Length: 407
Ligand SMILES: Cc1cc2nc3c(=O)[nH]c(=O)nc-3n(C[C@H](O)[C@H](O)[C@H](O)COP(=O)(O)OP(=O)(O)OC[C@H]3O[C@@H](n4cnc5c(N)ncnc54)[C@H](O)[C@@H]3O)c2cc1C
Image 1: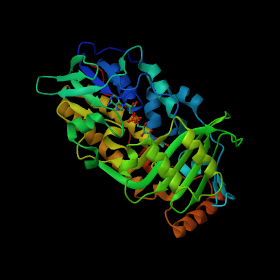
Image 2: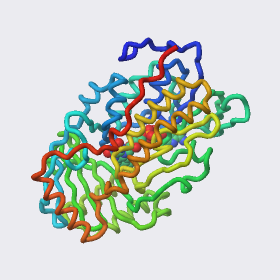
Image 3: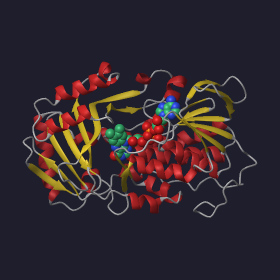
């Protein structure tokens, strides 16, 4: 039974076959709702196993309602990081302001959640793994829509036919590229690069975030628990994307080290740790903006279709809400064209509002000039004595429809 008391598999008569590419957030969430509606679901993931670990992500507003309807809210509350404070530092490492994390993120204390990305992925996977076929260590090679379904050839050589294929394969989606062309047509570069890695917690930090800034540069250390590992984050302003560095991990390390060469506080230790890290994740901050999210029987969901960038903190929430609305549309409309149109119609305004957060100051934590940094610092000092901030309207701008009624 589903948490809302509805029997699983009631639509077995329909048994439409769906292939989802990507087993992170959007993919398994979509798999859950489609299976619940009687679809036969296969998820293909290029990694050899579920990708664990990872930086903390937020589940806010509308997305909290999605996970409540999935019945996983209690498990996510258990996994909630519940950070105690967020301390901003001046360039010399002295304290500028210490704030409640919700004040900084615009989230609602006691309702919104912050969990490790790997915890969310694991909870979603556990929810569907017995009902959905997972193909790890494989990926889509060729999509052929010339027949009555989608004929898929996998990298492993296996061949299968599906009624519908969904790309939930992230910001650099291969499904999007094979359907719509190169990423640069849809990628909106936001002027920042970032490096993310873990390092030993030799600072004695516990459930807190430290953020150091100088104009155009920021370094953050995030202790998500009381354990001995820290999530380290180095971000910097770069007018044009460093295309060459994006392809070579050594060039990424050199670029970050060069940018932060004269930085104060603990940044030199962080750069040293980055050089040694085996989990470095380097990327540009950017958004995916597309005029349409589907072509024929193939559609996109989550970051693949509308990545909002880490600057908004809304990537996982959009992935969860988008998965819900896409599944609802496919369950309500047997015709995939009508379903994909309904999905876009129901989701696009919510996506646009959240992507627009970067235009409305979501990057304000990372000012690029000395003057803008001074202004930000003044605002942060003012927030110390302010009551808790109100939630950002964009987080809850979507009222979820009741899931498509079962026949
Ligand atoms: C530094 C950083 C900080 C962030 N902070 C936040 C935050 O605070 N709040 C928030 O909500 N979000 C945050 N995000 C964004 C968030 O992680 C994503 O928006 C969210 O995970 C989107 O989920 P997704 O399932 O669409 O894509 P992803 O999580 O990117 O998953 C894509 C999956 O597809 C798989 N895949 C890729 N290519 C293929 C292929 N060819 N075939 C098969 N599988 C493939 C990948 O291995 C992966 O498992 C942050 C992201 C970063 C990088």
